[in-house]
Amino acid sequence: MQVLLEDFKDIYNLTYNQTLKYIICKCSNIEDVNDLIQDTYVELYKILKRKKKIEVENISNYIIGIAKKQIFRYYGKLYKTKEHIVFSNSDILEDTDIPLNFDLEDEIFTKLNVEKILNYIKSKDEKIIKIFYLFYYLNLKISEIAEEMNMSISNVKNVLYRTIKDIKKNVNIEGDKNE
Picture 1 (cartoon, rainbow, N blue to C red):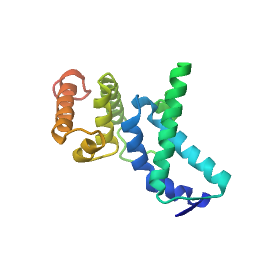
Picture 2 (picture 1 turned 45 degrees about the vertical axis):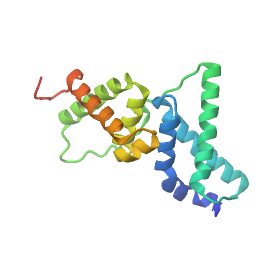
Picture 3 (picture 1 turned 180 degrees about the vertical axis):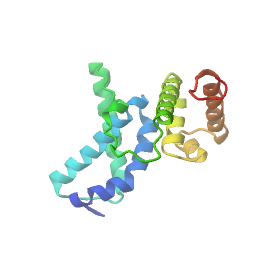
Picture 4 (picture 1 turned 30 degrees about the vertical axis):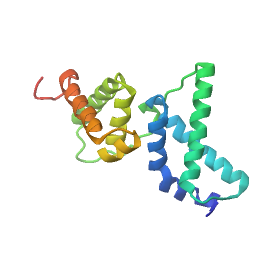
């Protein structure tokens, strides 16, 4: 397969979820995922820009190879320099058009609740964080998560259901009937 710089957007769209899944499963800290996925595709772009075209048998495997090198470089630098850069939700630009049925109070409660739950999950074991990220962000099936994380399906289910129960018990959700 011949890949040109003009194909970058299509390749990105085609391979993004698989690459993200790989990085989530292989990284040491879920906070690093955004940096690693960005570094991976920036590296691919640089390679295409420098070489003009590349010949690969499987573009997904090629990008996973880049991701693997980025993870190694990232954690090599991280542990040597003890630097840690984390992007927050405020770094993401949001749409400024406000829909007619927009409920500000409901939106604020939703964001506060999501933030509380996310912070609570971040305090948990790395395995729990990865399972939640793969299930709720990437919408992977439990069987797919089990395969990616080398776990049994019942173990993944147990982690999800126990953690949901734990969240309901320990996180004060705004607007919840139990308040």
